[in-house]
Image 1 (cartoon, rainbow over the protein chains, first blue to last red):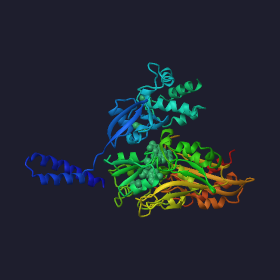
Image 2 (tube, rainbow over the protein chains, first blue to last red):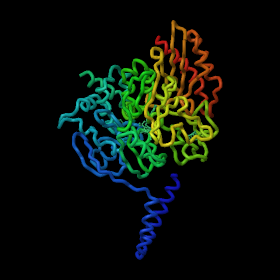
Image 3 (cartoon, rainbow over the protein chains, first blue to last red):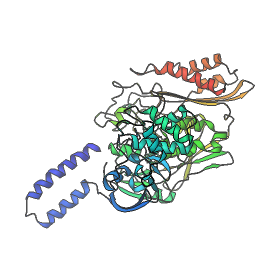
Image 4 (cartoon, rainbow over the protein chains, first blue to last red):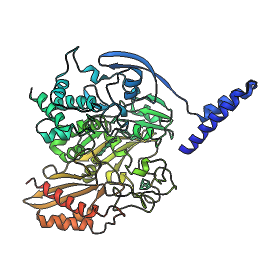
Amino acid sequence: MKQEYNFSRRFFLKTSSALGALAFIPKGVKAFYEEVKNFIVPKKEQLPLTVSINKKSYAIKADTRTTLLDLLREDLNLTGAKKGCDHGQCGACTVHIDGERALSCLTLAAMVPGKEVTTIEGLANGDKLHPMQEAFIECDGFQCGYCTPGQIMSAVACVKEGHTKSVAEIKEFMSGNLCRCGAYNGIVESIQKVAAK
Amino acid sequence: MRPFLFSKSSAINQALAKKNGTTQYIAGGTNLVDLMKKHIAEPESLVDITSALPAKIEVTAKGIQIGAMVRNTPLANDAIILAKYPLIAKAVLAGASPQIRNMASTGGNLLQRTRCPYFYDVTTPCNKRKAGSGCSAIPGENRMSAIVGYSDQCIAVHPSDLCVALAALDASVKVQDKSGKTQSIAFTDFHRLPGTTPERDNNLPANALIHSIEINENAFAKNCAYVKVRDRDSYAFALVSVAAALNLKDNQIVEARLASGGVAHKPWRWLEAEQYLKGKTANAATFEAAADIAIKDLRAQSHNGFKIPMLKGAIETALQQCLNR
Ligand SMILES: Cc1cc2nc3c(=O)[nH]c(=O)nc-3n(C[C@H](O)[C@H](O)[C@H](O)COP(=O)(O)OP(=O)(O)OC[C@H]3O[C@@H](n4cnc5c(N)ncnc54)[C@H](O)[C@@H]3O)c2cc1C
Ligand code: SF4
Ligand code: FES
Ligand code: FES
């Protein structure tokens, strides 16, 4: 399937530029060409979406293929959530959907309307940082900072879920967030600190 | 991703009416979105079934019914599951990450596809991805592959943890087809062995959907365990896993259940070892003998001979953990 599709697409791109160069194509040929093109190249669908992010409502149009992560970063300029792997394996894109942590890279934007999304940008209260953000600063919960928005969103959920009874439990319930800098000890300390409050 | 049309269904018959060969259902999306990004799944349209299918765990006359849209986290935290079917919770919590478990549905977990590296690499031959193209794992990287029930066309394993527990507990899968007819498939008949048709993972009828999972009451709640051995402590697929459950009467085994993940194309039941355990005294010697029976006919691939002794140890550990000592 895949190879056929690639071939057809390439075929279309080549022929389209060649045909485009010829200015005097009869209308009938053009219409026929449009039909062939529509048959070969799958239709793109733009969906009108109303999404609620950090308690603010946005009405936008997005291609059906848009993930929540791309919607946040590319369309809404909310670049806090990071694209680490784009395949569910690192946790850098973690956000809260209806209060529960989820991976925005595996969530289609089309499935988000009607739900409340919270990103790292929505944690602080005005200029006052969220206690978990403060704890990460105090406990050196990061080095390069790339995984940090995902870590903090996951950490806030971890405390809310009550999975903080031991270091082992914290590690188990934070295992969906990888940190290439290895700031793990600081992250665990941050969580213990907030959980103890 | 290939462009696709998107729609949402709020009722089962509506979702079924929309389904055809080029349409796919989407639930949590944790497997499907990934496969679509890699051009392994290329549906022309998607139907969101998250509001169409049951999302509750209900007590029935015979046991319980788990709706296909029950997500993994609420499944593992459910009071009835924890009291009467704790093996399910143990297996679910051994899988994926908290974020993924919040998203992943029960139905989607059954239908998730293999994690064989060649299945994911579209530049290599793979009979499961493209029938007849060949199997790259047999002569290649196969340390994660099967050690039982495989064929010369595919040696992939089914990656689910939940399914191992469901196989051990003799669950059944309630499916509904396009005509609206429902049918119950025994869990151990739901997934297939690769044989000559590795492109087919399971026996879900064409265009049908999974409605729910049913489990009958059993006497395994008190003595059960799930042991998963993997490359890192958490958030990794199983090298081998074992679901064990014993019905004990004064340290005598009335009945036993033993199933494994990471060993075959489907969750694998060790029936001969279960039969052996029946009527024996629960102790280390019995457990070792049962494990020896389980591993006696296994045949490893070029890079996963380690799985056989690992499995033996995992079976003994799981049975020992059933005793809660
Ligand atoms: C990084 C990572 C690690 C993971 N680790 C583990 C692990 O250790 N153990 C484990 O068990 N799993 C693991 N998983 C897999 C995860 O559990 C599955 O992806 C998940 O259960 C799939 O459920 P879903 O609802 O997201 O399915 P989707 O991705 O929405 O769907 C999967 C397939 O099922 C079909 N489908 C879904 N629901 C139905 C239905 N009711 N009827 C008919 N068809 C349906 C879809 O059409 C699709 O083909 C991991 C996943 C990732 C990304
Ligand atoms: S083992 Fe199966 S999934 Fe893996 S390459 Fe071979 S055919 Fe493909
Ligand atoms: S970017 Fe989503 S998990 Fe890595
Ligand atoms: S701080 Fe650098 S990856 Fe975590």
